Length: 296
Image 1 (tube, helix red, strand yellow):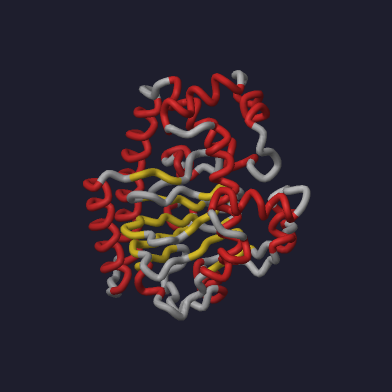
Image 2 (tube, rainbow, N blue to C red):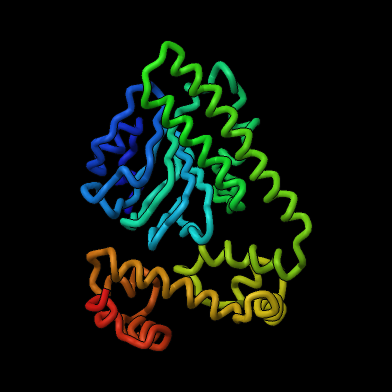
């Protein structure tokens, strides 16, 4: 899809209209709601789009939901804290069991209390990791903060916006503490952990274009054997296994949620022939692509 074809939503209300969610915010540049409130009438699958606002998701239950930020499939295991920032390309599939909160705001909402928003909260940068895994205690704290924000949002008050400004600022500082915990833990990673993380990040970016372990090793300035040794020592899987699992995951997603036929999916995933894709898929999953689609 060309960038020109990707819609851009200026406000949360514009996005909600597009996904057929009846909720609308009454406060300029700020919004909050529970994911449970989206119900069954809201679109389950959203193709790529961009937005002009920040969006924070505190996830309590993701079910089989899937999220892509730019070209990366986001890991939603555990208790993820997710940041979508203006300019990113976003797409998603929403499971009916999903639970949590969305907080949406524009930079302008905090201009009086956080004029240096990106400098103060680096996790809102496009270049930073946009997903942080919360501990149970962190999750409970942020959930309480979100509940309080929603209570203020739902009840008119002369100082409603001022109260929400302060509450959102406090919320962001707690997010910063979560972010800094992640950053400090990164410094104590073993060599195997660092290489495996870097490799998995590369796989998310390159799996369509290359399925060759040696090209990933070259990007990491190590030998293919060393890459596989490090990855296997940490995950129990070879580097080739990790690449194939990522291709299989995207294959299943396209078969289940897109209208593309098997040949189109094969070419999209850079297989030279649809028959090569069918053999690959059956070897890893035990069924043909068509059979998997029928069962989904």
